[in-house]
Amino acid sequence: MWNYDYKVPEGKKVRYIIHTDCKNEADDQFTVLHALMTDKLDIRGIIAGHFDKANYNRFPEHTTANASYKEIETILNLAGMPVEKYPVYLGSNFPLEEESKPIETEAARMIIEEAMKEDDRPLYIGMQGAITDLACALLLEPRIARRITCIWIGGGDYPEGGHEFNLFQDILAARIVFQSNMPLWQIPRNVYKQFAVSLAELQLKVKPCGDIGRYLYEQMLEVNHSFFPDGIWPHGETWALGDEGCVCALLEEAERDDGYDMIEAPFIMDDMTYSFGYGNRKIRVYHKMDVRLDLEDLFAKFQLNFM
Image (tube, rainbow, N blue to C red):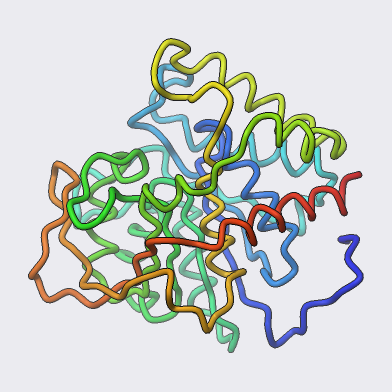
């Protein structure tokens, strides 16, 4: 359904689950569309995640995953994408209360079902927010740890760590995933902030791209004016499309290993700092990504498909 002169060979494609707290602010929506437009990614489903601990009183308590669900449906409709091809699953509306008690949701069951399928293609899940649903799936079916790779936008800068929005949403869930054997590619705050764009750039390159382009641009302006107009964030004329790190990690040349380090997974303390020396398996932690490749690919795909 995409306007490309090229085809990605079937052997190069990977299975991919999108996980997004899509109504949290204004950048998730861009990355959801980018993933859908990327032919290398065989989208197995889209999961609506919560942002319950930093809702800013916009939605009733324990309803933020529902808000994300509705936003995903809005995006699919505006982009003219069939919902039956891209099924949407509701995740938990709140974080874990205990590390040993998973929240059973249709999202967690979907992750388990997809991970346990017999399929030679690798499976990735791009976590663009709280990691609750993946942790619940792991608790419900520990065998998935060897059958899925998590790409997570979250966590403070290394080596100290510290407060970070996505981690703050569910520290217990992050702790579960970090202490598991699941392959984990972490894109911490100092790296996802590299995906910076200006509003003028979005006006030029995205706004003209049909109903979906105009919506994405205008909802960003709305958030820019309504969220903390007198504070440091938002920044007024720029925005970090931080969730783009999920797509970028799979677009980059697989042979490149200069953008990340393999380090022992830290234990995440209650104050969100990192503690080492627990003998955990090593995880991939990015310190730089190919921002030019990713953003140019994002803008090219918008213009090829919606202009």
